[in-house]
Length: 213
Image (cartoon, rainbow, N blue to C red):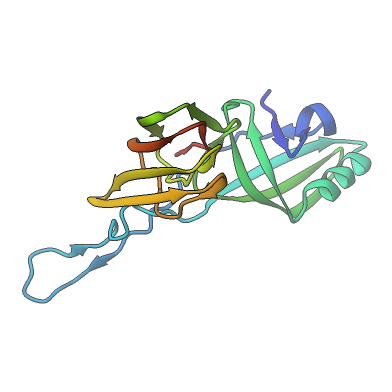
């Protein structure tokens, strides 16, 4: 039997609920087609900002509780209803979904209870652990950061003043960093490899979380 973790507790293991068969839909891409008179076919602007964006992923779930069910159902509803939490499916345990969970309906029947849930999640499923890359440049060094489908901006911590140079979507950037932790809004890691040239001496650490569809 499958199980689902809501926050820190499992539906079956902690509440005694039975998870009905479910499907996790793909998020809907935010496509933008513009019809232009005199042009064959529409102008596709879906990637006008560098990558396709997606709507929230809405996951519908049905859980069952056997009688006596009042205590378990009340405890579950109190813990999850309306709250934003990490949702983990035991059939895909490597990732979690960042979702707002609502209990839409509780139907009480003779001998059992049926709960209808909606998890409105961010479009990408996320890795549990952040990716950390540390190098020790001594003058000039190059680091390659590898990312999956979800665009992400890394947190950068440097032990000394350094200069970063990188190219994204055909545009060149040069950024000077002082000692401390920084976020560079222009340094968006897209799917694949991003090469960054570092000038300076000391320690530099890149930290980011990967997500995929």
